[in-house]
Amino acid sequence: MQRGINVLALVRGEERYVFLYDDDSADQLLRTLGQYAADPELSFSWYDAAVMSQRIARLREQSGTVEVTQPKTRPRFKESTK
Image 1 (cartoon, rainbow, N blue to C red):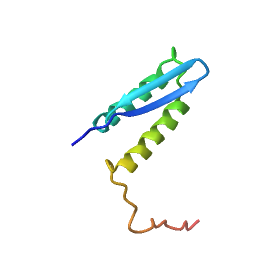
Image 2: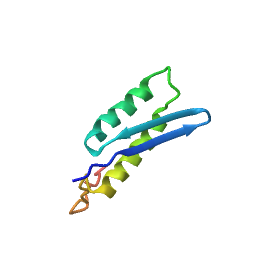
Image 3: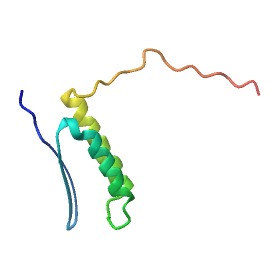
């Protein structure tokens, strides 16, 4: 079985954030994105981390490494009696 390497990049002006990861290390990359966003010495923001995290999630769905399930029933909410 052939394993692929995923490339995730953020280019902003002169700055480049390039991440190489395989499917088994995606969770570690998500933690790294959070560490980068929390580092005040980097220009990498929480918004950047959120956008890149969404991209990782989409890539995981497309590759079939994460099962996406939909709720079987709609949530029920109690009506307020006030």
